[in-house]
Image (cartoon, rainbow, N blue to C red; front, side, top):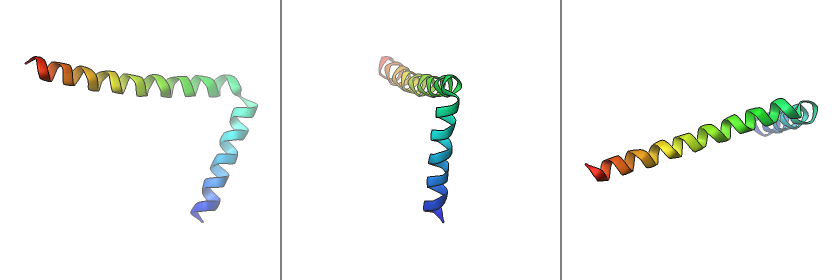
Length: 52
């Protein structure tokens, strides 16, 4: 059941990207920016940790 659900989700994702490439690119860009911000914050934390 999990395998079927996974394939259905992949199909829906590919279909959404194919029919709405602009909004899909915006979502991907937002996710990438969020991940980059997380790593930037982790780096800032360790820099501040070593400076104190």
